[in-house]
Amino acid sequence: MNYSDNLKKGEKGAWLSIITYIILASAKLIIADMGDSAALKADGLNNSTDVIASIAILVGLKISRKPPDADHHYGHYRAETIASLFAAFIMMFVGVQVIYDTLQKMLTGHVSQPDMLTAWTAIISAVIMFLVYGYNLRLSKQIESGSLYAAAQDNRSDGLVSIGAFIGIVGAQFGLFWLDPLAGLIVGIIICKTAWDIFKDSTHTLTDGFDEKQIEKIRTTISKVTEVKEVVSVKGRVSGNQSFIDITILVDPNLNVQQSHDITVRIEKYLAKKHSINYAQIHIEPYHEIDSH
Image 1 (tube, rainbow, N blue to C red):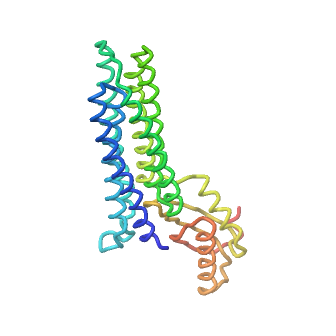
Image 2: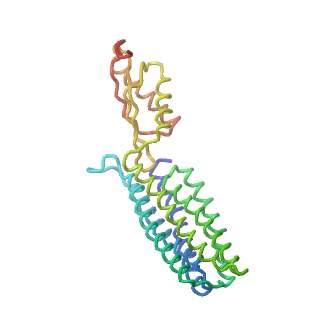
């Protein structure tokens, strides 16, 4: 299955998240208003941001499938990362709003005992989100999608958030009224933390950051090729979930063009097999004894 087919398959996970979040967000916000629960309301707002984030990921996956064109010679893979970055901004905005509203409620002393219906809503939501998390996690690993993997992690955090809301609401039933707004505050902090993590990963990718350990593994793989006298440099950048690698190696200067070409083909096969890297630009230079000193 090629990369475009993988992206198309990944859209199923995005659609599952969107539909689930719309249903849960609507139910939580309505029931939280009826049952007077700050924790469930914050949880519902959290799911509302997830709807936007999931839509952004879906759009990013669709754009990423577009083939290279006249002014996008490397394809549109980074649309997926840009979508994740956009989602992070939305999530951060809502997270800050949740924290502000909850703190205002706590400082004004507005505490109450939420209806138990809000607690059951929270725990049922947690179970649903863990099921969605399991599906998206398996799918993200199967198609090697960074944005879908991030969405799966968000699904898991949403499940944990709902469990936190459940604990806060149940605590309020036993007279610990401060637990409900405290749970809402923690939800807001978790939203901001998730947004920051997505923002950090997305900007690292967009600024051509690349895992140093992965670079060393690639260098080791190349150095094992018999004809390679020395690996001068290995540079990498990520576009979507595709790695683009630039390599400079030294070989015997007496090799002809065909022999040199055969070496690059062998390296490309190794990279594809051992590191799932399908885009490598290999520059060959002549090796002389003076180069090794």
